[in-house]
Length: 148
Image (tube, rainbow, N blue to C red; front, side, top):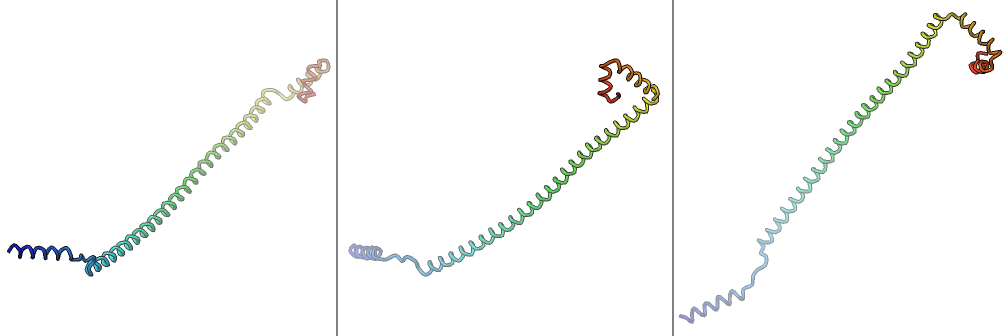
């Protein structure tokens, strides 16, 4: 009996040691083909999603660019309006000053004419001209001012 068990054991061991292991079965190949097909579909879907995402991002960037252009246009308009207002204020101040000075001159001349008679001024000028005949310094002053 021992011998029988030994022979059966040797046969089983020999059978196990001489058996070849099969690499890929038909089932394994089919499984790999299905896996490859699934992976290909998944990659195509991922590429499609990335393309859609890229297109969506491009559209949004274009919208943002349009909005920024609109805001820049508004800011340029506001800035131009501010410059126009400053120019108008400066122009008004310059015009007002010239008008006030012109009016002040006119009022001063009228006041002088009321207070001093033109005849008195002519007589004073004649006296100064007579004095200038003998006074050299007065003669030069009157010539310089165009009164002689």
